[in-house]
Amino acid sequence: QVQLLESGGGLAQPGGSLRLSCAASGRTLGSAAMGWFRQVPGKEREYVAAISWRGVTTDYVESVKGRFTISRDNAKNTVYLQMNSLKPEDTAVYYCARSSRTVVTRNIADFGSWGQGTQVTVSS
Image (cartoon, rainbow, N blue to C red; front, side):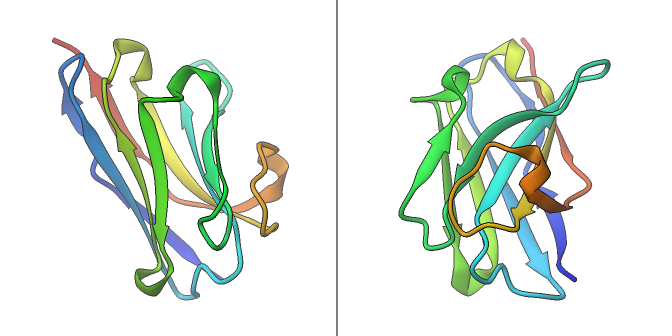
């Protein structure tokens, strides 16, 4: 079973940047698509972005398009989320997840392995 560990969260000012990493251990990312989700207290976990297993295809929720970039390095078993032009509404706990599919999906039910999350706070 794969274990996922997120890092890179923290405090950023509006307009600033952060880069999240998600390192896999125990099992390689293999031929699995990967995704990032986020959650704020009292709300459901929200899809942010996904990447296909070869990294050829990516997908983003409309609110982060043009600002966030998802990427992966299969040799390092790591997935990244580069977040630029951050806004206060991006504040959330960010989770990476491993999909049971090889292609990108927004369906949270397709993601079976989850990290513990990393807090991102955007505030001046």
